[in-house]
Length: 372
Image (cartoon, rainbow, N blue to C red; front, side, top):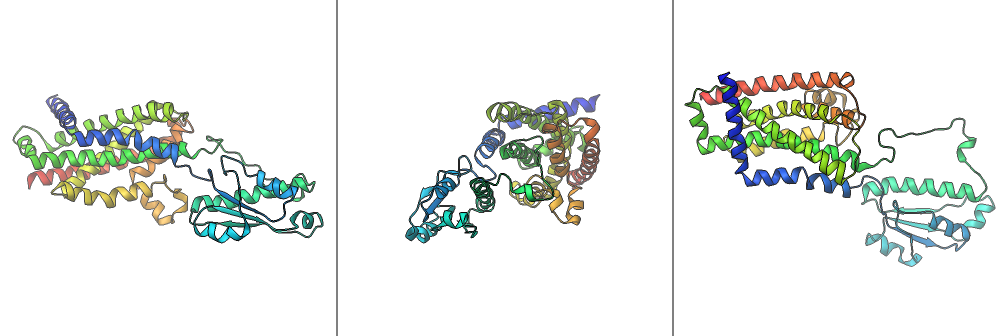
């Protein structure tokens, strides 16, 4: 009973220390508001408002039809561009796409000569260029088929492909990006908050004061874990309700309670990792340098930025040892697909096992650092 009282009071002490740390408080506020809202609402993955220059050398009804087929929000209204200004416009990056319809295009098409339309792409706008060129090809193909009286190009093919998007039928990139931003911020804060809290006590001498009290390394470590865990879980819940659901209007299908429980389990593993790194460092700058090669792979290789299946097989196996990999999988399954415990229990067990291993290693290192 005394141990639980010690852990509770030490955790309350962590809250008091955090309340007086204005920098960390501002970082918490930024991480769960602006850092989520801005990328999710502004950074659109795909083609959006792409600029188009249109060189019409045919001046026919068909060329006007092609120009009018490029509609918002994917494309801006095409701007008429003289042929002699083509190179200058592309060199200045004035347009992402410049389309050139040659003279006699309509006549050649009706005569069955298979004329070509030139689509010039500024490939420095990588995602827009790659996807937009495909969009333009599909749009023009549909318009040309309609103009020549063919209703469907797939009618002559042996099979018809029907694509359906589940869980995000409009393919809104901001939906997934908002959740991934929360996952990334949880990872950063879990490691930073616990690591800096331990180093702050060591630098201020308060850790030495704790050692003269009847406290064990386990009690000190558990106090730091539960207090920082509670702060991040509460911030996550508020961010999901206020920023994700209300401000961004993203529907969340799954159980909020289950996701917050998974978040707490993930924080158990991540905060232990933060304490382990803090025992290796002798100052806050050293801790920052140690955290960079740990946090960056956790963010980039967890399956949030790029699909895990696209990575080399050996790297997929290595990343199974990272708690962030399982947390990303659990977040998408619970919040978007509404998966219950019966579906996600393998990732839950893996996350628990990794957390216990990290906690045991960090506890052993923490005891050794206190004894030295």
